[in-house]
Image (tube, rainbow, N blue to C red; front, side, top):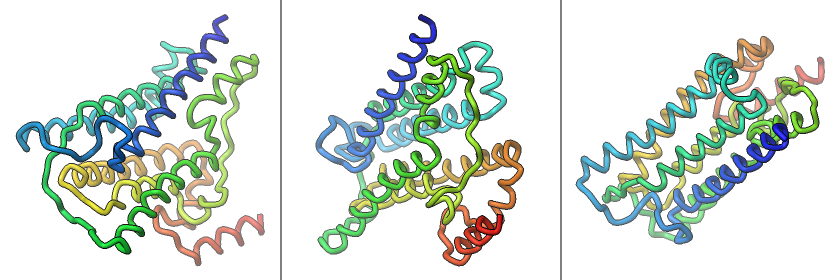
Length: 253
């Protein structure tokens, strides 16, 4: 029963994540499918909205980064079952985002506004491409392990968890972090950049750069071969020449 309960917990956590993921598309894209989006009519003084939005983003960033560190995981799995660790991380990250969506405050003011249809289309295409790249990247590195489903499924079958080997499939031959590149497209590709959206884009972009530093530090410890990969492949901006070098190295190996 315990293994089945952990499995249901993992599936439930994933369901919350997926609903949050879909909501985020509408929230950031200002789609009239959800009750609250990133823009709207300001409901309070600018300074108060600035503080609230910054705190909401900080809470998510701290939770998302601290719980992802190996030292925290080692401590955390003394309290919760190891098979449920990733699902708990996914669930709490989703709840932090739900809080952000609910308490986010529009701030007014327009930084840029693209009125021309031919100018809007590339930005909207970039927004859609970003979401597609984010989802695609998760499947390249095992979507189900990333969001805890593989862990709870293995424990349901009574099988030990085995860590995934280091690999660099498809887009990971072009850049080391295609998933983060997708998020940058999502945050910055918009025909209308408001003050609230700009705050969101700037702070999340800074967080991504900090997250890359922390993640790569952990990867270097877990996978010694990551250093050579980091030397060959750019971080976020693709380089065709370097991509060819990676393919040549892999073929030689």
